[in-house]
Every structure is written in structure tokens, then in C-alpha cells.
Image 1: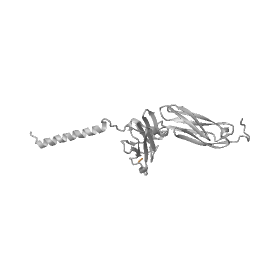
Image 2: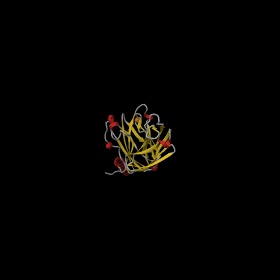
Image 3: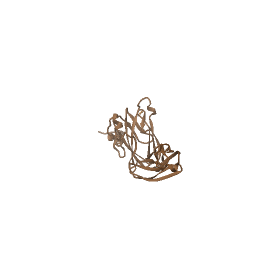
Image 4: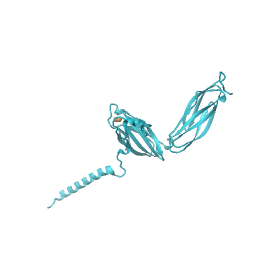
Length: 263
Ligand code: CUA
């Protein structure tokens, strides 16, 4: 049987196309560097999200080195938290689940785009090399206010990123002549020890104390305040640690009226 040259040519072209299509589809599924959203994140009962270790406290946690985890809950019509901040040069694994209906978690301008199905935890890892701001939005129609469902991802320069939290606690009042204490709690969200200085300013006094906070822990710093030096009045105070501050007012009262101070 003799096959016409044109027919042979078209046969060959058709074969090349078929092989090309199969190769494209295969590469898109299992090619190097291509990851499918799968059930790695596991399943979850949407009614017990608040009790789940990962989602009871949503937000960013430090895993170690340049690795972070972001735990996010989607619900009609918002993300919790609505704003995520991570440092540049980081590798972030997102775990996203839904409290109600199917949503999506889409970070505009990146390849982070996943459906968020109630009962499932969507997991994906991305690297952020440069500082920048990205919008987060929902791509799955999820009801009346679907179009308002959005969030924000901030990638900040490494030296601007920190997970330190500071809160200070002091009595509102102290009697003249007594000592009183302002307790400052420094929480360290990183998996590395934090060495820093806490500064108390009250009246015209400034007191500094060095503090070492263990990885992923917290430490109390106690400032002892001498009320005699301050005198009777309202005294505003501020505690500062690495740019974080907390403040309040201490009223020093005259203890002479029925006070049992030993001044
Ligand atoms: Cu959530 Cu659309």
C-alpha cells in the first residue's frame, strides 16, 4: 500500500501534537516544581475549629530559621486574621480552613490560590524574597458579600519584622512613702532567645533593665518605683521594649489619712 506523502506528513504532525498534549498535561500534574493542593493539611471538624491547636489562635508563628506558619480561617465574609505580616527571605506554609461554606484563599500576584473547603485544611508553601504588599481575596462565590471578602499580606524587610509583645501592669494608686511595682511582660514569638532592654520612664526617672526572654516564651521585668521621689500627684509612665510600649498613670496619694505606711 502506498501512502501519499501529504498524508504521511499530516500523520506525523498529528502524532507530534498528541504526544505534545499528553506531555503538557503530565508536566502540569507531576512536573518538577509543580505542587498540587492536596489533603496534606488533613481534615478538621468545622464545629471544633476554635478548639484546634492550629486555628484556636490564628496568625503567623515562627517555626525556626526562616520558616513560618500562617494559620487562617475563612468564613463568610472575611479571613481571620485579615492581615498577615511575614519577613522577606522567608518560607511560609499556609494552613487555611473554612468555618462555613467553600471559599478560596488567593494571594493576588502570586501562585498561591486554593479552594478552602469546610472540613479540609488547605496547605501550601511559598517563598517571599522581596518586601511587598499583596491583596488576598476570595475567588469562590460564597454569598451576598462575596465581593467584599478580602485580606492583606505584608512582606516587610527582615529587620522590621518582629514578634515581640509587651504589656505592663501597675496599680493605679500607691501611697506616698511606699514602694510599688510595675511589672512588664515581654513575650518572644521567635524560636530564638531574645536579649533586650526594658526601659521605664516615670516622672523624671528613667530606669533600664536588661532582660533575656527564652525562645517562644515570656519573661517578667519588675520595676520598683519609689513613691517618695515622685511625690503626691498623677504620674504618667511608659515602658518601652524594642519600640513596643505600654503605658499608664500612677496616682501617688498622701498616706497620712489612715495610712499605715512606715515612712
Ligand atoms: Cu468567600 Cu467568596
